[in-house]
Length: 236
Image 1 (cartoon, rainbow, N blue to C red):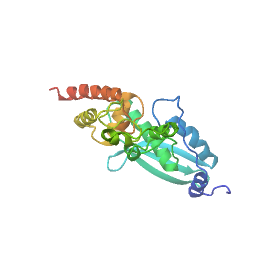
Image 2 (image 1 turned 135 degrees about the vertical axis):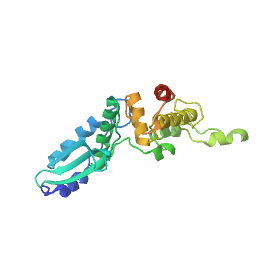
Image 3 (image 1 turned 90 degrees about the vertical axis):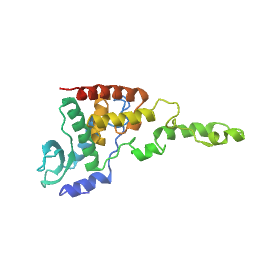
Image 4 (image 1 turned 60 degrees about the horizontal axis):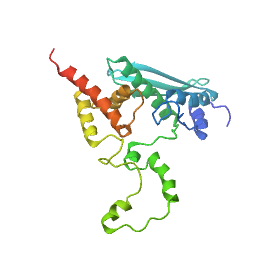
């Protein structure tokens, strides 16, 4: 394709051969590529097409706090702008975590770039995530088991995979899940984005769903919330 004439031709050329984000396994415990990796992969490809990426925080006319972002084709001075909602906080660390999260997602959404390990809450809930896919080859290599007895037939038919809610395992328990949501509500974090931002801040890594939490993670966040809620409820 010839040199892009405007932002639309530039993005057409970019999306004709888009990069894929592959998480650096040494980076951190999150299953997603972080902001640094996203910019290292995406920005050079955009710049080669004459496109600059810019983000900044701002207030809309109605007072809402947002992250503004823009893809601009420098030669033609044509742009593709957008906004991402943010929530004000008195905690600078939490605000920084929220802005970093927004910058990463705005960049991937605006460019249409997908992360290799990314799946949504629906996939995680249906058991079609990465861990189940990794177990399948092992199950096929095992010799066929003898027919189960009548009283164990239902358990034998269930496919191998992560423990279900309520079973023994390292994942967050239903009781922890319920208590976590109650405490987030009392702490003023009932909004999903605000709640996940708070959890990410406490655990010092990006969390996109409470299903990612281990029992230990959940306990740490719950303990942190209980202290925060107790302070709020104390009389002045």
